[in-house]
Image 1 (spheres, rainbow, N blue to C red):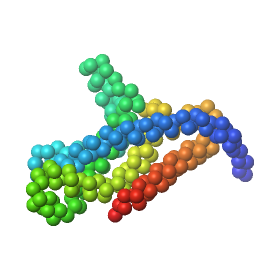
Image 2 (image 1 turned 90 degrees about the vertical axis):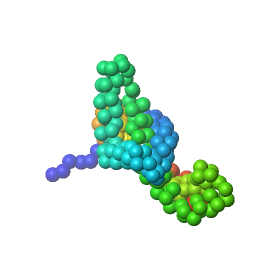
Image 3 (image 1 turned 90 degrees about the horizontal axis):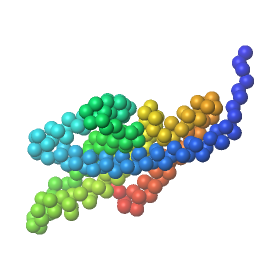
Image 4 (image 1 turned 180 degrees about the vertical axis):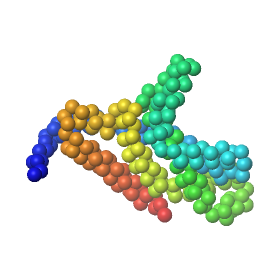
Length: 226
């Protein structure tokens, strides 16, 4: 015979302040990591459109290496592997929060580079030729004609990347970053209410991603992204 189900949702409700305290770190890691990730991705994406074989090769190695390895492995490599080298050689150490932000930046940068590359290459070459025929330099043609149109086309996939990176922050619980999932784990360790707590953690993640999706759809409609 099966036992009776005994769930205590009051524990989960009482733990909400603790869980919510982890949201600020989840959002901080996501926003700061993606901020740097965008610049990395833009640089690598541009490098992937160049005819310079060396620059193209370096960018390609970076993109394929990062996309070919899990972000969890990258975070562990940074926090334990790189820290070991820094500690031995320079007596320095990066904390878990910094390692998490770097991991998001490096990982998202590889995916954003492909978003940037695809958006740039989707712009009709005739527009570039038209810009040059008006006397604009290659740089000005890119800045005034290609980039504005390409950036509009980047918005939907960049929004998707934001959501992916936000969810990826949950993996940083393994290096003791005090984000949302880590706070949930700490509560479960003291209350043993795993079902209730992880249900609340899941719902909070869901509310975050749905809110971001709603804002992104409004932005896309405002900019008439097609």
